[in-house]
Amino acid sequence: MKKKLLFVIESLTNAGAEKSLVTFLSILDYSKYEVDLQLFSYGGAFECYIPKEVNLLPPFDYTRFLGKNTVEQFLTFDFKKILSRWTYSVAIRLRKAWHSDKARLYWKYVSSCLPTNPTHYDVTIAYSQGIPTFYVAQKTIANKKMAWVNVGYKLTDINQYFQEPFYRKMDYIIPVSESAKSIFQQTFPQFSDKMIVIWDMLDAKIIQKLSYETPLKPLTSSVPNILTIARLNKFQKGYDISLEACKILKERKIEFQWYAIGQGPYRKEMEKFIHLHHLEDTFIFLGTTSNPYPYIKSCTLYVQTSRHEGFGLSIAEARILNKPIVTTEFDAVYNQIVPGKNGLVVPLENPVAVADAIERLLNDKKLYQSIVTYQQQEKKGNTEEIQKFYRLIEAP
Image 1 (spheres, rainbow, N blue to C red):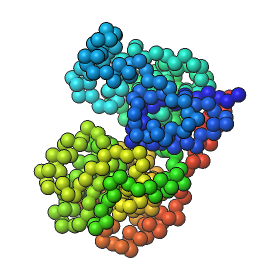
Image 2 (image 1 turned 45 degrees about the vertical axis):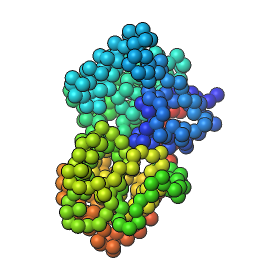
Image 3 (image 1 turned 90 degrees about the vertical axis):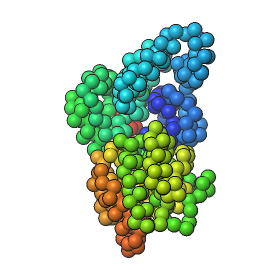
C-alpha cells in the first residue's frame, strides 16, 4: 500500500519555500506515496504548478471566514472566530510584530478555531517554520512528523520558549543548508540529533525549459539589465541596500535598468525613495510571476542584497541559467558562491560595495565571460536530494 503523506505550508505565493515545495512535489514518486496538501491561504501564483497527483485539501472554515468582509463576518454570528480575528489583529498592531511574533500570536489567538486533521498519516511535513510547524505538531496525527527550516532561524527568547515544545514533537528537523542548520543549532542545541540537511531542490531541466517562455513584460535590450527576485522586504531581503546601490550607480552616470520581481510591505517606502531620488526610469517593479525564469535568462546580472537567507534559491536559479551574480555576504552565501568564479560577494550593509561590484562586472568583459564559462561547467540541479527524504520516510 502507498504511504500517506501530508504537506503543510501557509500558501503558494511567489517565494522561496513555496517554489521549493512545488519542485519537491513535482519529482516525488507517486507510485509509492499518496499526498495531501494543506494551505492556510489560497490563490497563490504557484498553485498552478501543483502536480495532478496531489490532493489539495479545502480551506479551513476559519480561512473562508477571513475571506469575508467585516460586515459579513459579523453576520455569521460566529463570535469565536470574530474574537480570534480581532484579538490577533490588535495584538500584532500593538506590538509591531516581526514574522516569528506574528506566528506565535496567530497560534495563541487563532489555533482554537482550527480543527485537527482526522486522517492518520504515515508522515506529516511542515514545509516552513512558524504556523505550519505548529499545525503539524498539534493538529495532525502521524507515525512521523517533520519540520523544514528554510531560513537562518534566529529567535527572541520569548519565541524560542514558545516554539520549543512544537519542535520537541518532531521526529526530524530539516534545514535546507548547512548554515541554516548551524543557526538552528544555536537556537535549539537540544534538537541537534533530529537534524538532517536536505538542500532546497532544483530541477534544472524544468527551469531551463520554462526560461524559454515569453515574459509578460520584456526587459529592455538597449541597456544592461539588473534583476533581483525577492519579497519586497527591508530587513531580510535588504532592498534598502539595493536602492542605495541603484542611486550610486545612477550618480556615476552608468546606463542600466534594475528590475525587481516580488511583492511585500516595503513597496510604499521603496516608491518614496525612488521618487525622491528620481529613479523611476531606473528601478522598475515587475510584480509577481509564477515563472521568473525568462527574466533571469534575459537579464545581464543577477543581484541579491539579502541580510539573511536559509539557502538562496533565486541565486541557485540564476546559476542554472548562467547569469553572473553579485550578492551580499549573508549566512549561507558560501554554500553556493565561489568568489570570483561564479559571482562576486560583497560585505553586508555596504551599498557602495554592491555598486562597485555591479560596475566591475558591467565593464570587465573578461571577468564577466569567465564567470559565465565557470557556471556553464557547474553541476546543474540537485533532485537527487529527495533520496534523503525517502530514506527518512522508510526508516523504521
